[in-house]
Length: 565
Image 1 (cartoon, rainbow, N blue to C red):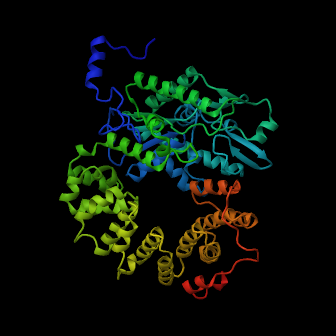
Image 2: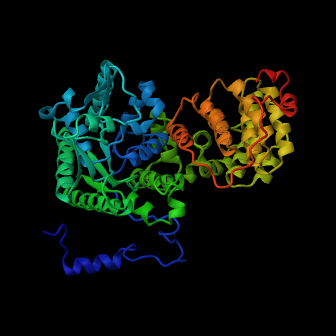
């Protein structure tokens, strides 16, 4: 049975009236395809500025929720991460749900009394006294049963908050799912190898059919409709992140094509048969974009640019800031100050007319590193923001545009206010490094370290710059000085370990990596990559052999008394 039937007349009207009914030509003005694709979409409802939005799904859902929270929306699932130090250490990917059955499990447990959560569906004793929740990320270490139980209670509570969220965003990830024959439910991730060894007949890999994914998604959206907000609206997306690896005996590219095709066809069917469900084309945007612009070098993870493009387009489409008057924007900002990005970002008229709005957007854009919006506010700040802060903001915009020379001209004079001196020296050091003025960078690092005696940053940043230029001995001494001040700060240790790896000092790198406790998902991923480092074909020359490095004379001049490093 067809998903959609149109009369001949309606079809002809569509093809004439639809500006996006044909492909744009290369070089065409306003090309919506290259380098980053911007597929058209038509929202059937609006977000309210600052409202609660529930997000569930694969890792692309985490990208969406991060930007939505930064733009002023309340994301209940992120509160789980803040409440648990172990969750926070691993990051928001701990909540990823990849397959449609795994998403259905969480929705059932949270909303459906007929499918209440049972401990034997998730808790698994890996070894004596150490348990895991098999529906959570493998990066979470086995721990005491009461800790695992408490975490599951927190997750259930967060998912139950879906009842109060008018907007629910679901991101489908994959169609290769692991099935537990003993419990009769699908797992969220692959079982650990030790579990398969201990119970060789218990777990199976299922490559789901279209009908199986469709059944899971129909039940999911029906549960949300029955138990959710009275006016619930669902946005369905398909994650553009491909399978990292396949368990099937075929090329991952082929396996991924099947997986995404099934998910995309299900999403289309659900959208066409449920009037409260919209489809947002993030999958098409990434996969149709030029790969060098859309994907990181690992060919798996979307770039920051394409993530920002899609989240900003979604917010712009569903918020419709142009429809809000000044008073409505003021009320939204009073309820949730972060809503300024989602509302004022598209209203240059209000920024020009109202200094309070200009200052609010200036503050929010600077905090969120939105240089495009920061630049818009600069003409309207005089008399409302200190002059040195405006100058520093202009320098930030110049640096973001790759104009280090312009930034250095703006940073020629050191500000008098102590409140901005750290920012000033940080920016000047970065600008001098970008301009390849290493001698000037040494002077800036010296001045910064004299002003802020406890920060390792002058040493760390200068060390990274020296290492990139092959000045290994100087970089080594600077890293040692930074570590003396950093108190095992992971960024400094990771930078140092990377240089040690590059110079084939692998034993020293291993000792440094053993001290690293990542503070966010990016650091966790970087740590793993450094642990799995493969020797480069042409590494930089290794420093001469010898004992532990001591700070060089140059470092001693930067900070007297640092010989303890």
